Image 1 (spheres, one colour):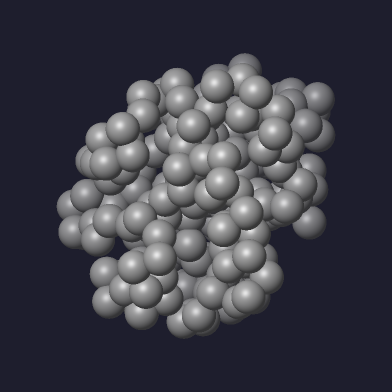
Image 2: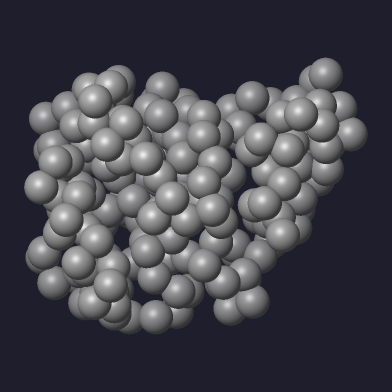
Length: 183
């Protein structure tokens, strides 16, 4: 079995609402980093809906919550309205670079072991978190049909072949981490 474990999330859940946050809190997790596009909001949308706003406010009572997104800074500013911590990443610091993760952890004053990264992409969210030894949680994208071209490229050229290889070589791992993700 020769595949890159950096792309394998520690956990998989169908959505951000299925994650057992209380369990992670009891295990000493203090901070949650969320991807924005296709994790919290639909791609190409410029507003967080009220349901997600309420959810983020609720978990903010227990956790420090931040947004770590490769979206442009102006888009993040428009969407997040300074209600949440976020960092504008320059092209050379975008996920999976460690820079944004390190800046986020420093700002939130937590260690890698006290944080979780939650996102919908293996090549950015999971890879970046795993490089930093942050717990990575993969969630199913909200809508694959309206994704940005670069995201479609990554999914088709990197994610899909990787997941197919896992399916052939380690079906149990595929069932645990990827079966529902690719549906």
